[in-house]
Figure 1: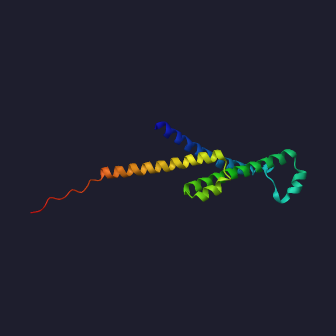
Figure 2: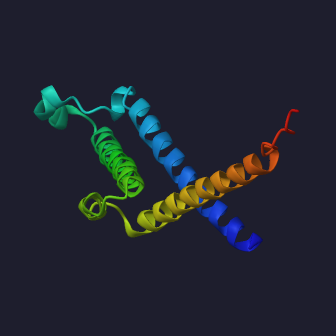
Length: 143
């Protein structure tokens, strides 16, 4: 039992670490856009491509590709998490196509752990309440 609980906690921790790393990647890549060499001037794209050094063009293009990929991963994971929590089969199937299989498994395990933990804590809370609440005893008849 303890090994299963440890594995479930590890999966939930890996999911949280995945979300944290995706948020960090989006933030870092967004901040790198403040460096002029890594920024693509979309309103002057033609002159920028012709006049900029090749390493600036490649660096800015790679940053933009990485930023789009990081946003896609983050948004698809959050959408799949919300669809899994909602328990609506149509929502899960609609979002499933854009989520990586490894991420789907980690998200499914994290949602299952969350549900199991909430069910178990509610059961323990209800049991503790019934044990600590004294049952009313009949009062002695008055004469």
